[in-house]
Length: 427
View 1 (tube, rainbow, N blue to C red):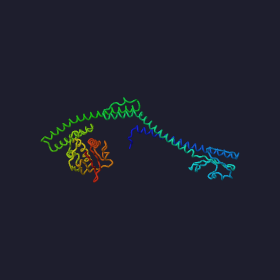
View 2: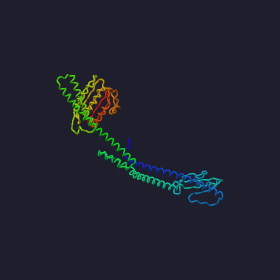
View 3: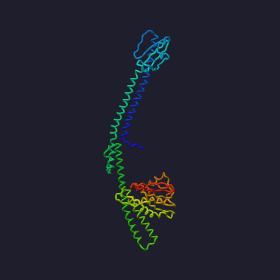
View 4: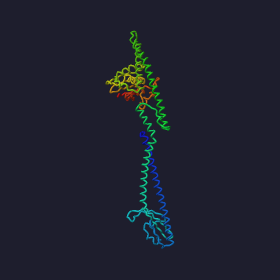
């Protein structure tokens, strides 16, 4: 899941983490270099001092020698027992020893040893003297890291407000346009930089989108106006012809089919206009529709689509269901669902059940895969084995109509036999 944190927050965190990480890396490097240099310096100095002490003892055994920060002692092999026991087995070189000090605490000592020509020289340096300095340096470095981290945080806050000010202003203006529903030019308020280029691109996109929407509205209005007139003529003419006494039953049935097709075309036009305007006109007008009655009318209008196939169509009404929507909207949705059930069923039964604030359309066709159920509601997607010249728009229109009225439409394979169940749950 992608993060939804604001860009400024991410920029501040980036600056803070960068400053803290860089300071911590510098502190670690400084402490490590100091430890290595100190170790080499102490070892080299002690070794040079003990060599000098040994040479001095060989040249003038009785010459006195004194040191302030180190403890020195020389002894011949014969009197080696006079030196501390822990020193007696040490060879030439620098050694680390941990022994109790004068204060009773364990001290860290470095002992430099030189054995030459029967003379043994020892030089002891109390490294614990330097431990306090190390601790103080460590505390100072840690404090510096946190100080630099806070400075980086403050710098990030300040820089983010300066750097992101044009982006923030652009986002604010877009939010205001969205709330007001009115688009105004953006490029006039920004400099000729990357944000200005983005504002110009948004202005061009908004202009093109506005033109497209206006053309779409004009087209829908023109189509609605131009088609309703001939459809009204067809409806009135078929009504007059049905009143003629000399009509045969076959001609009367054909006129009824023309009348139903005209009514379906009128309902489809109204439903498509609702979709193009994105208006929930049904509930606002208080129009209620009997679902069972519309389902019965749709079934009768779809019977000619059976084409002589051995199919039974049953309507089962468990309890009355009404919806706050125009009958035309529900008729278009059910026409697609029931029409698809008849199209894909070669033989068997199509059952329409009304009840429990829903309507189910089940068939005995080839069925669908559960993973493909949601895909069939996309534009241009058709079921396997679909014949004819359809464009795969029927279920997409049903999905949009149901979304417009907060209904839930779904497809699922049947569990008892092969087939599909289409369900519309009303809110």
